Image (cartoon, rainbow, N blue to C red; front, side):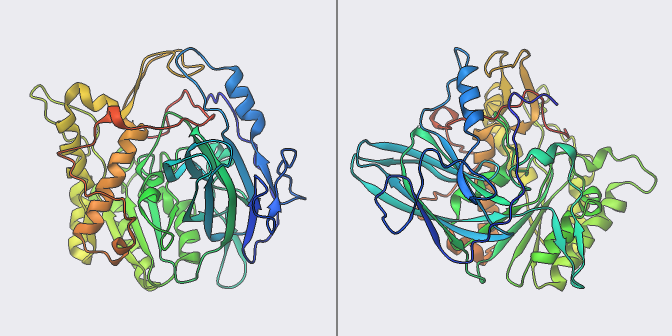
Length: 434
């Protein structure tokens, strides 16, 4: 897999047991004053991160691609857990337009405007994890991540904040352990759910964080190419089970890759259905609510402009297990069909990774991917997930942010009005799975 820029992840052991504030402009005298030379090291335990990648990205910009000035990454070494992050936006010297993401491009603050001398405070919960699994008997196991995941920000020993935007302006960042009773939404799935690290790829799991207050955590364990059975075999479910608690939710969206399994015993109503029941049993044993999510549609139109079914009987198998086990289900399969058909054969390309060659540095061939979303498509599908939660009357929806507007996939947002600030990490090869 060709990466334009590679991530360098460090192993560190710096504990945050109470609130710690990092000041970038000196306004908060009681905070740690972060200086330009404070680059992250294991010994320091905090600091600016990946600046060499940002600098390299700017040097390689082409005529159609520009990286915003003033963006930066800031990392703090912390153990596994949920953390409340409070960012103070604004500057005494200039107006700002700031977007804040965390870890592998999870969106939390979107295009927040501040006037010169104006300051705004935003709080959200970031879930941080590494590959270590602590078993009930005290022994340690490990999630068997894929080779490419070793470069992901999600699987290291630090919490990383990305400050981006048209005119990024952050005065301070406060990080503290989240309250123990904060419910966690555990996400399980494939490349349509995963936190995509690289532009221009995106998935709904890294966008849904945008819509919840600092009273909800989202832990996205999905990975490209995974099936329900491979997810379990890799120890991802085991890691989740070791951390989940009563009052949490676990969401499972599989089907894209499962239908391509050809081993003896494979099939929608065989190993797939059996694996789904394993998720349900493990969740209920811990007092956690399981939620099934039918797979997103592929952009595959027939001659009349209607989406063709490409998932065989896997959506039906999930519905069957849901009915048999009395599991609540979100019909993302149906909502994405409506979404694509509303946009139309050509318009739907704007929700997926369809870009002519040269749009991104190093992109020598056109992107024509009919499965994987771009940021706009992922953003819209995240709203469908929220609507699915509302339809199920899940208590967690009481923690939606006040600016959330009800969404109808038959009346999607105009893709032209969607604004996304690219990060410096770009991948010219599509994610695993189809």
